[in-house]
Length: 137
Image (cartoon, rainbow, N blue to C red; front, side, top):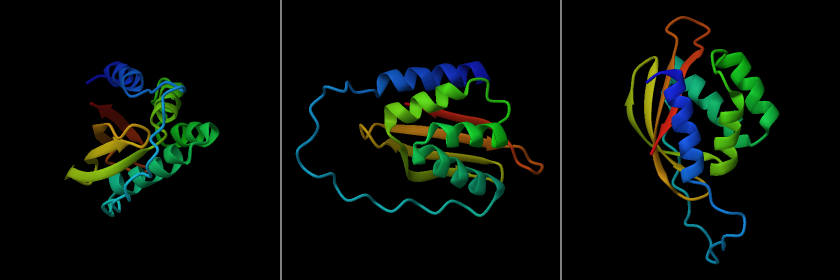
């Protein structure tokens, strides 16, 4: 997929998993969260951990700073912030596949519980900038 395809997928994802502000919230407490699987101690694992810390923290400025430093080729940082706002964060459910520079995850939206697939790829050489951060339904 091209960068434009990933950006379009992220925008489409944000539209699909959005819930209106007036939607009735569940009255029962959410089920206890399963502990997230440990990310590998590899370049992609370390960079993914940093990405989730920045993104799930919810601070748009922290997300922008992360993307500027670690994903300088990201063409529209606001798309990442919009997805974060729509999902209220993303939790890792499982690791589907992993190498030193590529990670495929099963994840879910914190807001809706919608399951998604996430693919992250970093450069082989330090500082291991992201090449791809993609979400798919």
